[in-house]
Length: 136
Picture 1 (cartoon, rainbow, N blue to C red):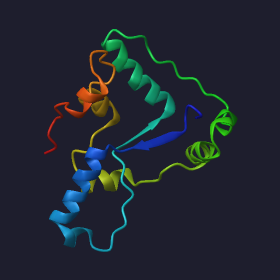
Picture 2 (cartoon, rainbow, N blue to C red):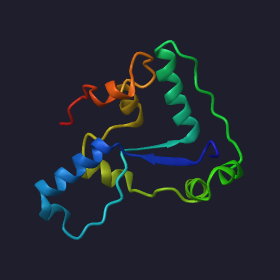
Picture 3 (cartoon, rainbow, N blue to C red):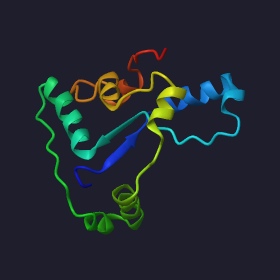
Picture 4 (spheres, rainbow, N blue to C red):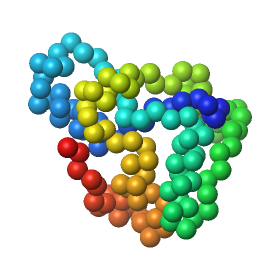
């Protein structure tokens, strides 16, 4: 991805939180169609967030590198189509609206911290048991 292209992120946990809020206050959301996102970062910022987290755990830093999208065509046409969507359009959630409607959404850096990303002692299995910070 080009380093200054922005990508929006939302965790599965926040999707559940947003759904719960809609069920809790259905009249507040009647007739709304909401594209949900909790954070928006340039790809170079994504790499920096991964890098900071990994370095804090004693692992080597992540270095951003843009590669040709044609590489993905060799792997899978479907994957290439996904990559081209992110390169050319991406998601377009209204970040201010999301933050107002669903306070406490998880930023990308918080997600990395909460899931103990970069901790070499964590396994896929331990991630599912990770203690996460409660959303207020």
